[in-house]
Image (cartoon, rainbow, N blue to C red; front, side, top):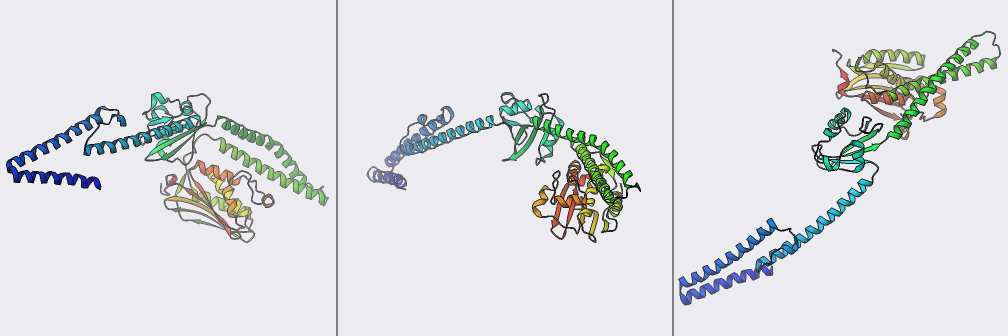
Length: 435
C-alpha cells in the first residue's frame, strides 16, 4: 500500500512542478518539460521490457540471470526472482520424487507400464520390458498394441472391462505365463501391471491333473465294488440283519464316492477347458421342464415343486454345462429343504438380462457363509452335508460354468426362511424365442 502512495506522490509532484513552470515560464515551456519527462519514463519502461523479453527467450531462467532494474522494475524483478527460486525448488523436489518413484517401481517384482489416454507407452520398468518384450529407450510413445499383438490382449484392452486380470501364455519368452491387470487412473490414463505366474500355473496344472488322474483310477474299482454290493444286497441268503445293515451302509457310501468322483471329473474338465464355451442355442424352457421332472423324482413327493416360465428366450451356450449348473442348484434345494417345503424353479427376462433362479423354503444360510459357498469342499454343516449326500463340489461347478457363460451368481438367503439362487445372463447371450 505504501508503494502505491509513493508512486502517486511522485506523479502529483511532477504535476505540481509542471503547473509551477506553467505559471513562471508559460504553457509552452511547461509542456516541453512534461513531454521530456514522459519520454524518459516511456524509454525507461521499454528498455526494461526489452531486457525482460531477452531474458525469457535466451536465458536459462535462473535467478542469477534476471536483469537488474530500477524504480518500479526493481520490485518486478525481485518478485520474479522469488518466483523463479520457488519454481526451481518445486522442480527439484518433483525430480527427486520422480526418481524415487522410478527406483521403487524398478525394484518391484511386477512389471509396470504407464499408458496415456491413447494407449501409448509413457514409461515402463525393467520387469515389464522383460515380460512384454518392450524397450523404454525405443518404445516410448508407441501404441502398446503395436508391440503386444496377441489377440486376447488387444480384446482385453479395447473391451475396457478391467475387473479381472488377463492370463497371457503366448509371450516372447518361451514358457512364460503372465497375468496382466489394467488399472485406470487420472484423466483416461492406465497402469498396466504384469506378474509372472508361470510357477503358480504349473503347480495348478499339476494339481488339476492329479485330481483328474486319481478320479479316473478310482472310478473303475468303485464300479466293481458297487456291482458286487448290489449283488450281495439282493442275495436272499444274507439273513443276518447286521449283514444287511452293513451292506446297505457300504452301498450308500460307495454311491456317495461315485458321485464325488463324477463331480471331481466334471470340475477338472471345466478347469482344464481352454476353448470358449460352444455357441449353441439352448432351449431353456425345455431344460427347465426336464429339471422339474428330475426334481420330482429326487424329492419323491416330499416337497411342493413349481416351475414358472415368464420368457421364451433361449440361451447361447453349452446345454450339458447349463444342465449341470442348474441341476446342482435344484438338487441342493431339495437336500436342504425339510419335508413339506416349497421349491420354485423359474426362467424369466428382467432388465434385458436372462434370469434363472431356484428358490426354496429351506433352512437358509447365514450371511458370513455366502461369500465362500462356491469354494471346493466348503460346507456350512459337515454332518448335514454328508447326511444329505452332498459332495461339496456342486456350487464350485456352478461357478465355473457361469464364468464360461459370462453369467453371475447372486445368493439371497435368510436363516429359517429359505434361500434363492439367481443366475443372471448378459443380454448378448439371449436369443429370442421366435428365432
